[in-house]
Amino acid sequence: MSQRMQQGQPMIVMSEDSQRVKDRDAQDYNIDAARAVAESVRSTLGPKGMDKMLVDSMGDVTITNDGVTILQEMDIDNPTAEMIIEVAETQEDEAGDGTTTAVATAGELLKNAEDLLEQDIHPTAIIKGFHLASEQARKEVDDIAEDVDASDEELLRSVAETSMTGKGAELNKEHLSQLIVDAVRQVTVENEVDESVVDLEFLNIETQTGRSAGESELLEGAVIDKDPVHDNMPSDAEDADVLLLDSAVEVEETDVDTEVNVTDPSQLQQFLDREEDQLKEKVQQIVDTGADVVFCQKGIDDLAQHYLAKEGILAVRRAKKSDIEFLKEVVGANVVSDLSSASADDLGHGDVTRDDADDLFYVTGDDSHGATLLLRGSTDHVVDELERGVNDALDVVAQTVSDGRVVAGGGAIEVEVARRLRDFADGVSGREQLAVEAYADSLELVPRVLAGNAGLDSIDTLVDLRAAHEDGEQRAGLNVFSSEVEDTLDAGVVEPAHAKEQALSSATEAANLVLKIDDIISAGELSTDKGDDEAGGPGGAPGGMGGMGGGMGGMM
Image (tube, rainbow, N blue to C red):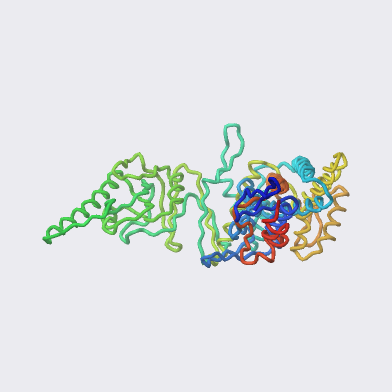
């Protein structure tokens, strides 16, 4: 508990269960927790990075090396660690890729900040130095970045391949990268000022197991993985009027429990006849709209299925909400919630065809630019990881088309920016200069980890990279497949400049936020390792949270 002296007696101002960590102990605790999160994903970085197997409390298994997925699936209950996880989530939302780089950089910034703290440099000076370095680093990235034409298909494929490499799509990355570029182009539109805008909402991703990833394909329109509700229904409909329903075609149930006493068999028959009449009425309402095809988000009664089949209407039930929303864009229909108010104006128009081999419906609209990327894989785990990799690649290709700037990968941009930051540090006065130099050192974590994950000597690799950049080769990076330092942009290792800028910004802000904390006050247990308090809290804080500074109760 926290105490205050009053007339020689301690004044208790916090509850018995409260915990408090102050000053350097708080900084050490926060830095150790943040670094633990960063180190948990470091081994996944790069084409040679390893995967993580995550098993949740229900026993479900996820195998991935996607940084944000790993951090979201981990059962982390530490306030500082959660701040670092937010770095990954922000990076994913804003750039689509580079989550591991952002988190690992944040961890390295805090590691180097800890060294400065041990030299009695005040956190405020470190924070200011990191801020100056971050601003300058983003300027340098913009200066180094090369403008690209959105029509440069080869470069866009390289961006997609770089993003997917090491994410389960290795063997088929050429085929998949072409699909990704084609998909992005299909959903790219021009805005009012003739700028290319990629609208990924018009791109749907469906997965299917049992076949090779090389058999994945890009299809115009929507793909619905459902069967007709009745065997006697047609399976195809050309130039069809399509009705989208998010209400059930079933007998309406009362809101309250009702009990009915039947004294005569004819009374029971009356109830059954009334239910049948209700279903006939609903089907007639569908017929009156002129619909040829019905996609229903909820259930369709067996009797209603029979009547729809007699009317020659193709119906699908239990369609996913996301599929209904996508079909709305593809066929230009309104989603109907109340059949009694449905009309021909709510219908969309398009062609519906059935692929009996894959048990899929293909739906194409008249004027829609919607498309579906059908990803195939041998097992559920394979196709799930493939989908994560493709999603990242779609985001970075879309970002490249919109932003129009790329940089060389393989650690080239980090080493070049670090070199320029050291030159920049010479003009920074005060102790902030040391923080700027520490920031430059932190950026070189990326090539060191890339080399280490590829089984190469990270020190030798970094020496070679620095030498190349000192000679003016600003696109020199590590090719982990050949183990050589080369022009990675020419080698096809290309990354969007925006993703690098966002990673620098997110990592710096998270590190500065952690460094600014000098007091942790908790109403309960801070440590997530509740079963072993004596061994120390997360990140190895000395003596556990309850043991810092002679125990929480002894901190004045």
